[in-house]
Length: 122
Image (tube, rainbow, N blue to C red; front, side):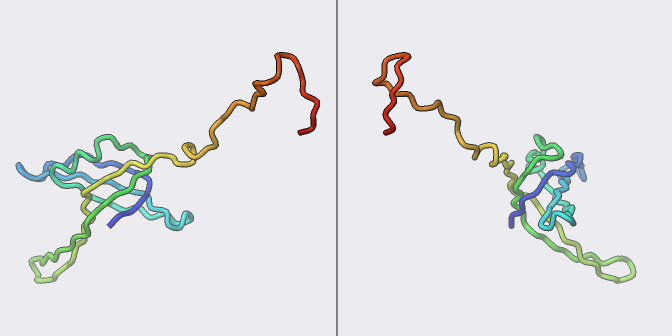
């Protein structure tokens, strides 16, 4: 699955155990700009390095897997949890600036001598 959005927050690296680490990323997803959603993703193990160069405000595309698991407490009540686990992250560039019209010099008549004007209408 993929989603595009703006980086809202990059979490600190969490060393859960000696062999397991994770890191959170909060993305502002504005399908409806009036009511943006803040979605928490997580990266595990070596994928935590994907978040190193990110800063709030960066536009990104996040590729992730949806994972779910049950958990039963001491009273026997089962709850279900979902995780959005990042496997690829692509920084998006501002395409509006790149799509601006290139600037060209005005055309020059190479046949006319310097200072001489052509008065023909065509």
